[in-house]
Amino acid sequence: MSAVVGAFVALVSVAVLGYVVGLLGVLRAQDELVLSRLAFFVATPALLFTTVARADLHSIFSAVLVTNVAGLFVVQVIFLLVAAVIWRRTRSEATIGVLASSYVNAGNLGVPVAAYVLGDGALVAPIVLFQLLVMAPIAFAVLDGDRQGSGRRVSWRTVLTRPLRNPLTVASLLGLLVASVDVQLPSLLMRPIDLLAAAAVPVGLIAYGLSLSAGTKGSITLRRDVVLAVVLKTMLQPIAAYAVARWLLDLHGPALLAATLLAALPTAQNVYVYAVHYRASRTLARSAVLLSTLLSIPLMTAITGILS
Image (tube, rainbow, N blue to C red; front, side):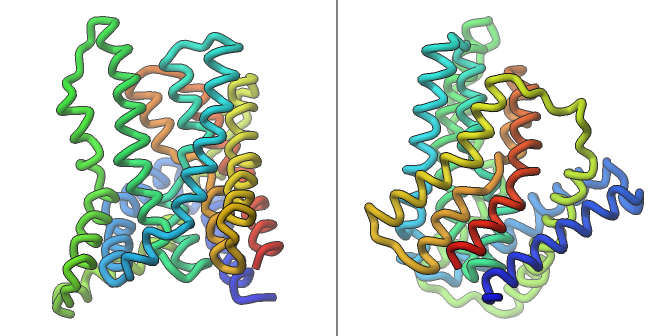
């Protein structure tokens, strides 16, 4: 078994541990929120900052970002054509569906996969930035436009500055700043940040497994919108990323694995948060997040085994 497959097995084992402790009641369903918030607001930003600050900028903005953008663009266009043109979904419904079919869990799951399986946590940083600085603001603009149409006005300042209130964005941008000026930060400052960063992978994975144990049949609805979003997210997006990486960019080895594996990440929980906030397609978002998450472990395990 290769080192890459072994690393992914270790990740799966910790996630399974989270699932088991959830089933046994050692941790409660509400503890998943606490662990997820700890990972999202504290540990993962620390890991992103330390990783990006010490990385080579050329390696951060690599072909992996191009393949992921290409993959998400393909699935977004398909979902829009089917949902908006054929099924006549509203703008808000189509927007949430687009996010559900392409917005990957780059924070709680992408960072552990990049850092532990691929050996370079910086690989996920540009994906985080693209989603939070490009995808999310565009989606917010559309969703807020519907709010304005219903008399609930939201300022453009709020739309444009919302990504900067996300800790993952701030940590990535600060890391890019440090890397760009090539400054060696004192160990007295970096050691506590490194200590927090070390908690990102295990805490995030236990929360991930715990979230699976809390899932119930009643929380999943197999409407055609859900099926379309999940199929696009779990199957077509990694296939599209692989095709672009392999045959257009001629990537091989670790780069090809990184491009495909990161595209196979499940739908981010942020999508459900956005759906709740804008009161749009909450059932679609919840079902897509849960189903893609359940499917992601066997799919990413298979991808790792085949491409490593």
